[in-house]
Image (cartoon, rainbow, N blue to C red; front, side, top):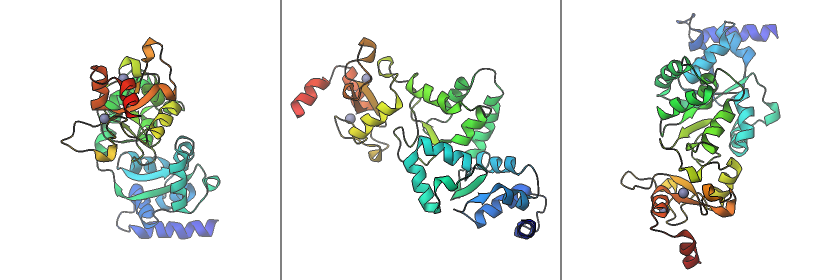
Length: 288
Ligand SMILES: [Zn+2]
Ligand SMILES: [Zn+2]
């Protein structure tokens, strides 16, 4: 292994000869030279010439917005978003069982330009007292409608293992519209989370488990059951901005969290249903 590493070190130093001290610069130069390629931690150690290379990789991801996915992220997301991850792995030409935790890959050539701003925000929220959930909520509410990265949440949570569950609780129990590729926003990249709207679902539409939410959205083909609006129809002049799930028999009145008792509605028709301008059972009766 040693001769190989020496070659790589030469390559690493050769990439940016005028910045021999900038380990981070050498790491990203290496990633950009080999995009869409699995890179091992050992390679990055050699290329960077420092022991703290993992921290530099995280900075590139979180602080500078480079789309570097780690093996940890890919494996974690293989459970959360299996289809999306299998697409990514196909592009990379590898199988999940070939991915190790110390693997890294640069998936996109561009940088997320808002990352630096979020990085400052994360660090100020991180210092606050209190649990992970209120910190997450504060971070999301500062970024309404803008995707944030899984690595940012993990860092904000202080690397606690249960961080993903806290996000799920905000969505399923407290009714915050925080979505991923799998929970209603198939347009999002793997590992991105977004708070769609700075508004909790009304009390009667909370406590919807993720598997039920996905089944309802899929049955309704991610479109409003009254007007057929989909997210791809998003337009600045159109008041329809979000898809929401509505309990036909209200949950607080004993209605069940079953697929049959839930419908997908756009925000406009959801409001109309609650203003009694549309009677859903009659509406569906007349349509069928
Ligand atoms: Zn509608
Ligand atoms: Zn409702």
